[in-house]
Amino acid sequence: MKKLFGLALIGLMATGTVSAKDTTIVRKNVESSDSYGAITVKTISSTTFTYTCNSSFISTSCEKDTTKWSKKSESPNGNENVATIDGDGETRLDAIKIPEDIAVASITYDRKFTLYFDNPRYSTVVFPFSFKTSCIDKTEYGQNQIPFKFYKIVSYNGSSFVAAEETTEIAAHQPYIAKPVLSQGYENGIHYAYMSFANSNGCSYTLKKNYDAETDKFVESKYSFDAGSLNGTWNFMGTYEKIQFTADTKAGVYGFASAEKKDDQGKVVVKAGSFVKAGDNASVPPMRAYLVYNKNGFNKEGKPSPDGETSVASISDEDLPEVITVKFIDKDENGNEEITAIAQMNTRTGVISTDKNLWFDLKGRKLNKKPTVKGTYYNNGQKVIIK
Image (cartoon, rainbow, N blue to C red; front, side, top):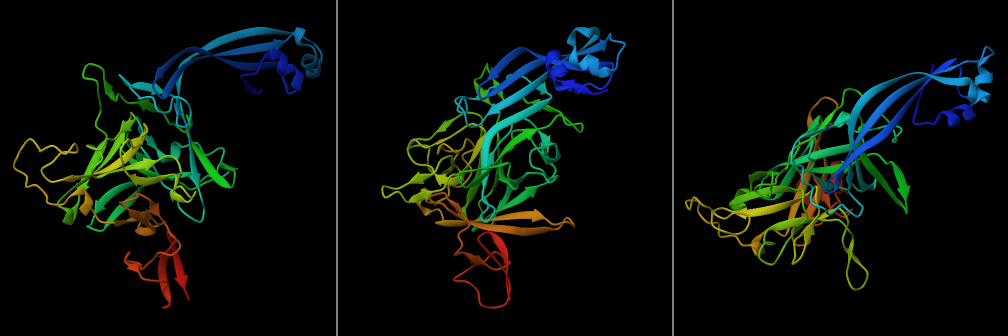
């Protein structure tokens, strides 16, 4: 007996797929729909109907004559919530305000992530729910591999950010750098992938409260790490609302470029999916993240810290290093960490680049040119063996 979903009975008969005297149909109806900014949650009711064929002839008679079928039973299955997140559409810039926890069965994130297999692409993300990476839907990729990797910036050593792969669980309200590794489709010469979260294999989700209506404040979504010789801290900040920077608030801020930028001659100066040093009126959309450098003794708005005890760093926004290397660390099949990509972050333009002209040794030290000595190096973000 086959279980058929979302089909009208008359359509079922026309297909000629019924092979038994009884069959079941599950009908789903939208009972309600609630908007939380860029997130829509629909409550779906589900009822299972069982039909029986009253004909004494073989089952093909039932398939050809729908009048011989009658409803035998119906059984309500209850309600479930499904969530859709707008990442590219008209509501993508609407602030996401979730006033209380909401359990949902599945989530679709309609945001297109682009990828080039010969040049790693990275994007910032923050989610109002926790999930296991194994719960990301893999059915449309044709492979059992998890289609995305997520990295957390774990340290800064004075010249390099170190971003380590998070392999098992992603936490709510925690900003990450995401990298698509499988292609879901191909358009205009660019591979792309979307992110959906399945309701199979025991996966379930809760949209976590992120907004207090009484105080009109969002939950804090950030983590900090020491800036070393810069005498301050880096904050990686997630946001659930569009952040607009001004001349007063842009200092030390590096935001995410959602679109390609060109100069007057049509030359691409900032690639889509890169970090860009914030200028006047720069902005960061919801469910993205941005970097902020904080001097010791000052908060992120540039105002003195309340304790008044911390020494004020002498470094200014103009004194930040011109280029910061970003090292992406994955785990090999034995669980050992290894550098799998090295990129350059230009703090003037904010671009994370894996330029084909950039070469590094295995310790991440930049070389002046392509090496001639045999060995293993990094180029274009990947390992290269010189023989």
